[in-house]
Image (cartoon, rainbow, N blue to C red):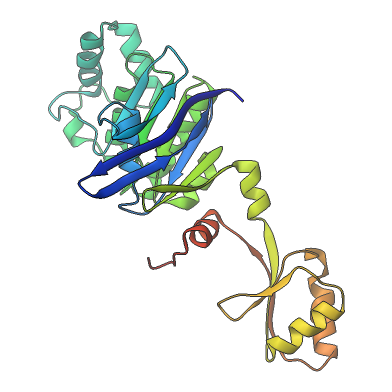
Length: 295
């Protein structure tokens, strides 16, 4: 497997608390890697170590490219009175890669080519985030690390940032590590995922593995779930269980939902609901971390 970045037992300790503990992450070249976790889970701590902004207490990480790392952690550091062009120009000069064509190409890449002399301080939040991504791209890194780049954006801003990241991956072949609370959006973007909980990586999986783990199931609510479970088992439905919300979950035979409904009604049971439920990335995250939708 061609990994552009890996970590080995990466740990960051503050006093007696491990903000990140024995973290092992594997990021493939050319993919978008989504790091999932609630506030305080350790996402930013890991990203700061991988970007060289913080020194690990123990463990190590390996960058398998000559291209370096671009970073956008927390709010982008922009000069509010300067234009997008001028902001990018300052960093490009500092890194020794400035040319007029280079900056104009960066502006096109992040969708800010028509902002002219407009001051960055008057940009929308989504535009500022795209400028931050542009700043992370100065110097031609092969991988960029983005901490919550869509946090706080309105729906239009989220779509704009998502399209920018997709363009970077598909056209510029940039590897992207991104964290986000908005799991629905992350599910549309990422090729691989790592779930961090209380400073530890509790699961890591590809998009294909996510589809296998998530998928769909038949959800059933009846007047007597205990009897319904017994009938389903006798009828040969083996992958059946009760969930904490008072529903029966049938994990296979999705095409037989109508047949299941008929069987239960014929047996005299009151069937309240029968429907196909999709397991989302959020559902899977909550099942792995033992959380709830309010946590």
